[in-house]
Length: 347
Image (cartoon, rainbow, N blue to C red; front, side):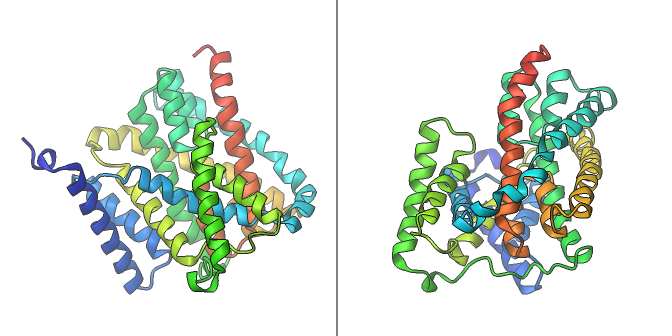
């Protein structure tokens, strides 16, 4: 029996948490950006590729994502509502953006990579990693290919985006992620915790996609618009969310083989380049036409995960409301339309 197979799940998870903590500590000591995101992510990624018996944190990681849902909801203020009409033109570009991605991505995976039609379609769609894997698997696609391709998309975008922000846009990633927990009113902290828990669980109960983020976001937004919440979650909570997101990205490569690296991961890398070209084109358009500032335009059209883009928007000091409105539109359209389009195409 292999040594990894003899380890208990708790031991594997504990080892993963310790490794991630060491990564975060090393990044912090070296003064590198986003240590609580990149430290765990890189440490777990390297260990996974070396064959270490890592294990994700299950519902704990899902619970950590509720923190970001609360952060987004808290940014939905009466002031944001009043400027929503000003975003209408750039938001209207999202369906066209998704269409262009599909027209480029599906033929790429089908004709160049040689994947079957179902896998090609769901690999191309820039939705949530988990949603695209679930939908694609149910439709008969290759779950391993889908998970590795989307994990690679998220990994590369989360790695490259901060470099572009700091080097190309001269935007330091030093904006406070939130106030210390001691500076936030205890009543608001309780309301945030309740919004996270109730939004998450009720969202799951009614079948809301992305319930761990969207549920808390909706409840917190209602509280924010009612004037009951005036701050984002404390810095300690957002750093915790970064830590678990980093672990999640890294452990996505556990068990990957050389054959899978060559076929699936390289396909994901090549596809990210195509996505980047499309994202640059749409970003340039919204910036040159005055529909968005540079940083906001870049983050709004970066085809990364909603949680990861939320973190980057916070640390970059970007307009969180603007960025998230665009990502929510993309995610909603992809998740709701993907199964319908797949059925229409007779996959």
